[in-house]
Length: 101
Image (cartoon, rainbow, N blue to C red):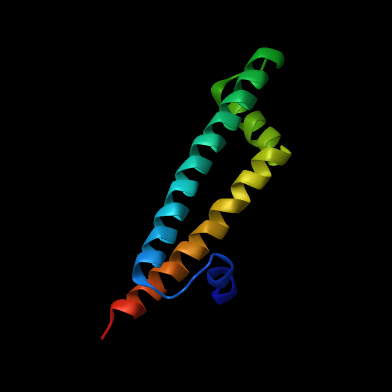
């Protein structure tokens, strides 16, 4: 994680850490919105194209989850929040260390 901090231009200042923490939070919010848009697009496709006598909300949801599991953009979007969470934890720890006497 220290390497990630260095890659993000970490200079050890509290203001810089706070800026990076806020940026990671904004990126996380953007990713959530994008993931929702991808999910909605795939859900619409499933609803419009899938005909089945067993079609129910539960089967549509199962089909949607299966499609999302194989959807490249969805997979990439699901991986990034985990990375951001780790970065945010590291930044919060570094910020806490900087404010501790």
